[in-house]
Length: 246
Image (cartoon, rainbow, N blue to C red):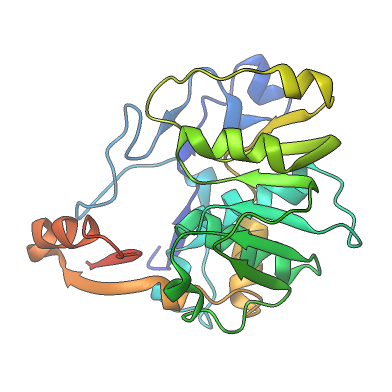
């Protein structure tokens, strides 16, 4: 009581075979805060299972702790894949998630090539260890390509950037169906790995230790009474992260 916490947004039933097997993020009966059959966090109160809560240390400020969930999603990639430090990793997309993925992978000693359309954003993150930024598609191919553009064209680009017997990590949740020719996936024997939510405890630890500093993401902060203005501001081109002060 009275302590600051972050909350895993996936609320599992705890009783099905998937939960009992230790995989609550894929519980078929789950509700999801702000997304599926469970109210979001813009209100004064919300309800979530106590088992979903993780304590936030006094050393970690609110403005960084709010990035726990997307950082956890970024950290799911090394949880799923056996990544080799000698292999460069390509990240497609320089939105919030793409930047967090690049930052988190760089923080654990991997070399990352981040491909995006907004070179001005890279200037906000001069301390991105192990990350190089480009707006041009490189001539080389990569063993691992992370697709985080949210654009169907990004998937086609990822296929072309992946070397034979390489792997594509799909982080995009596309808003519409799209057509593509999978022939090069077959010819080059490319693996496709879906990737969603990740380890909140490791994300919190990384934030607390300063391994990742997401504070440059914050474009503006609004009081809750100005929530509609905050939503409008968040939709403006170039805006990365808008916070509500509750």
